[in-house]
Amino acid sequence: MVPRCVLGNVLLAALSYAEIVLAQAPPPGPPATMLGAHQSVAMTTEEQLSIERTIVSDPRVRAIVSEAKPRIIAAADELDKSEAQAFLEGRTTTPPTRRITIVVINPKSQQAARVLFELPDNRILAVESIPTSDVPFSSNDADEALALAVANPNVRRLAGDNLDRFQILESGSEARVPFAAQALPVRSADPRDVCSTDRCVDLIFRTEDGYLPFRVHVNLTRRTVEIHGGDGGQHR
Image (cartoon, rainbow, N blue to C red; front, top):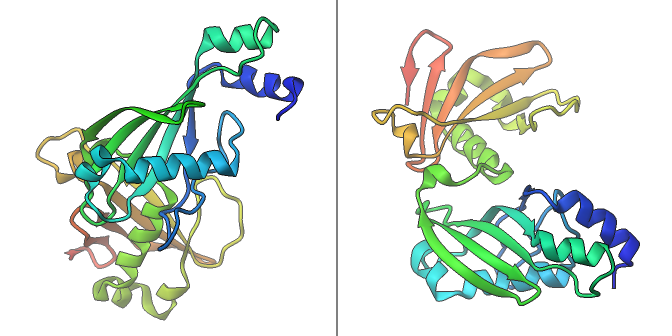
C-alpha cells in the first residue's frame, strides 16, 4: 500500500483534471502495459493490465472499434474531489474514487470510442463512439505517418538514400539526432477540408545541414501521402 504521505502529495497534484498519455498498441498475446509516464496518480501494473483487459473485452467497445486489437491512445484521470479532500484530512482511510476517460481507436479502420472507467471498482461507466477528429495524437501516429512517408516513392526521390535513417523527434526534444523527422498534427476548421474530419499529420525533415525544402502531408485516416514543396509542386 502507498504511504499516506506519498499518496497525499500525489493527490494534491491530481485534484485538477489532468491529461495522461498512454503508450503503444498491444502486441499479439496478452495485453501489454500501455498506461504511460504522465499519470496524475500512480497506477500499478496490475491496475493497468486490468483496465486494458476490461476495455478490450467489453462488447460495447468491441462493437465500435471491431474485433481488431485497438490502440489505447490517451486518457484523463480525475479524482472525486470531496473524497480526496476527506482522505487527505484523515476523515477516511478509503482512497478516493478515480474516473479515467480513455480513448480507444482501431488503427486500421480509425473507428474510435471514448470510455469512462472507474477505479477501484474496476468498471466501465459509459462508452460512446467518437469521430476520429476527436482522437488525440500519440507517438504511434507519428511513427505510422513516418512509415507511410518512407514507403512513398516520391518522398524517397526527394529525400534520397537517407530517408530510412530519419527517426521521429518529439516536439521540444533537445536530442541530437542527425536525421530527425517531426510530426505536426493538422486539424482544420474548414468543413471542406478533409482534415476537419480525418486525422492528419505534417512531417518535416531535418538533417545536420538544415531542414529539407518540403513537407509531407499524411492523412492517417485514408493512409494517403502528399508532398508540398521541394520542386514547387504537389505529389501523391
